[in-house]
Image 1 (tube, rainbow, N blue to C red):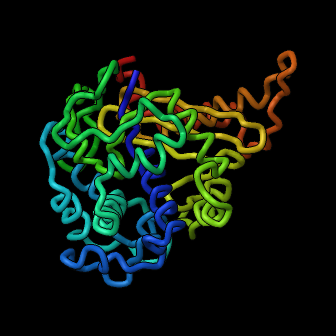
Image 2 (cartoon, rainbow, N blue to C red; image 1 turned 120 degrees about the vertical axis):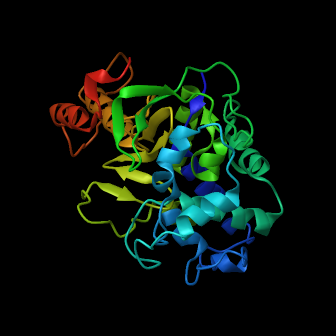
Length: 329
């Protein structure tokens, strides 16, 4: 079954950026304003900073969450989405510490469309999906409210005006306009394709060594960040596991792989109330289970040096489960 992969889409988008850098079409240091001069307030922000989440731009996804949940089928223009983030106060100076901003990734998408004169369905197919054989992954159009192909329903708790979950009110948000996420969070996929993607991302299959090193170079962390959890250019490192997690109304997911042993974990849930951190924690718990498993026949046991234990993650999962047992299975 296919599902919305949410902000896992960002890793796809930033990999396309690096492919375009390799071809000499753009540079990571290029000012965003060179490509989208009509968008104001982008001084000193570069293409690379948009993928590293160091642009300092606010995150439209969190700002607009109550509006999106109240009307999930509304089709938002790219300009509206960007304006919601750029019109809010900056969270940091460009090039500073990491701070999630789907707005920055959507802005990057607009800039790369201008640079290549190609739309994003073509860019994804040409640079990622076709080379890897990902036949069940796509970016639906803004007006395509249904998930293409067989899929589960998507649920989320209703939000109050300031974005807090109303645990007693669970909404069916399966019919959702991908325009709320765009190239930051709008793609759909399935478990098999995300397994292919996580392994290719961790191994740097699509990129040169120089680009792979740039993708995984750690970004200056924000306050309270754990030493084993690092952010790169649209990607995340969880100890030895490389990948990303995703969130969009209705679905949360995580896909990560160890490039040494090949151990790969992909999880998805059709209730987004607890956020991407819940899916990420479940994936890390499964990695801990697999890392402690004995060899099976000729298959060696993965030798993982995880900075967490299964019991620690079990406690973390309970802590991040918003609404707890009030959510439907």
